[in-house]
Image (spheres, rainbow, N blue to C red):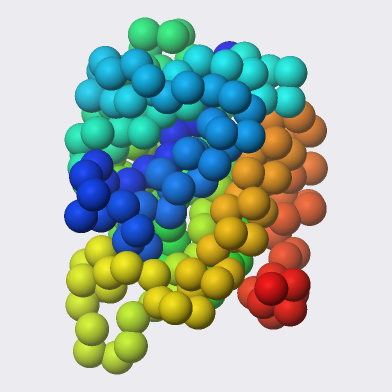
Length: 196
C-alpha cells in the first residue's frame, strides 16, 4: 500500500495559496480516481482507494504545514507503511512555477513541512513530488510569498501543473521512482507554458 500525502494548510484562507499546491493536486487525484477523502482521524483527512491498480491512502494533513509529519507519521504507523512507500507532494521554491521534479531521500531544503515528515517517519527515504512555485522578488519574505494566492499567470498554468503532478504520481506508483524521474525531471517551464 502506498501513502500519498499532499501538503498544505487547512482552511479557506489558504486554499488557493502557493503553499497549498499539494492539497490541490491531491484533490484532483482523488476526483480522477473516484476516491473520497472523507475520513477524519490521525490529524488528517484521508481516503482509501486504488491508483494504477495499487492500493493507496490519500491524505491531507490537518496540522498546518510545519507539523505535516505528525499526520503522515501516524498514518504510516497505523497502516504499517514503510517510508519508501510514502509519496509526498509539495511546493518547492527552488524551481520555476510549473516545473515538476521527483526525488527520493535527501534533506528538507528549508521546507519545514518536509522536515516534519522526515522527523516523524524517522528517515528521509520517501518519494517527493516537488512542484515549482518560484522565488519571491528581492526583499519579499519567503513566508509571505508562499502564503500568497497564485498570480493571474500562474492561475492560467495551474490546471496543467496539477494534471502533470497527477501523471507523476501515476508514474511513480505504476513504473517506479527511477522511471518517473527519467520521464519528469527533464520537463521545463517553457514546455509547459507553450502548452497553455
